[in-house]
Length: 393
Image 1: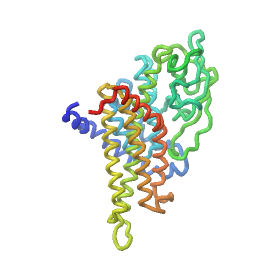
Image 2 (image 1 turned 135 degrees about the vertical axis):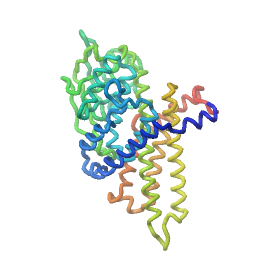
Image 3 (image 1 turned 60 degrees about the vertical axis):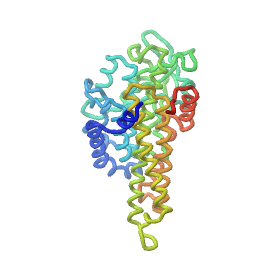
Image 4 (image 1 turned 90 degrees about the vertical axis):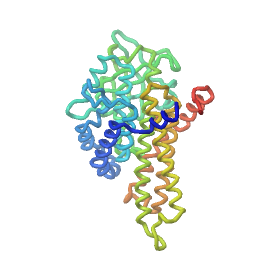
């Protein structure tokens, strides 16, 4: 990539800027005002999501031919994710979970499957969907999944358990990752579309989480759930690549959401430091506080640009493994650090619920875990580095 190309990928087109302003306006008008109460009450944000659906924000990633917004670029998705997470990442989690369903369906589904399911998401009322992969003993290690698929006449029977599945109990449909009985490792992994109220499908209680308290995720139990052959995505036994691609795109989205959380906290701390007086002057005049905020601002911009670069690569159809991992690793860890700095600037005020900084710190912490922990991202990056797939020039 030339220097001019590198500079160009960091600039937004007019359309991309419009997408950004669209999401920013909605987040400021609807999401941020509700965030504190939703966090306090651990409430499902039905009213906010209904407004988001009317605005087209729940289905922006669905292609236009199926009734969605047709915003299918990774960069535009990242712009929306940042703004919505700035409002409240717990609210955005419903859209993020739906986006994973849409992404996997677009990656591996037939035209008929896409029309059948994506059209249903674009009706007058908000509908939700899930991507069910994580299990009690297999998160980042997709090869360790134990949910089995047994072939029967005209279909498959799924048996197993999933955990931490976003939107699961609200979902009209789930894409469940299972393995064909008798296979191991990456071999045999298959994606199945399961109706949300299918016989044999049940859900555990909604998780009580440290952050993201407005989100809805829960265990999923599959007890010989029948899936017809028509609802298998791609060739049976060959779903690994579709799973990987879905996670890669989601990691870019997680990176962008991390930037949104960090930006919210940094803005708040900056304004607080400019207005708070100590020893006869604003505390922003003290280097002990202004320098950490300066470092935080630098990390925020670096995280955003790394995220945009990975998103541009996705939109060019380039391999994403290391680039998505780098964006997710850096942005999520930056969010934890920046929210920590913001809390420190507020001192005791940052530790109480009267100010939103403690919420943002709790929310940021999950970003280093979801869609693969920081340690997993480092493994991916190191493998690409020593395998020659990650250039340094």
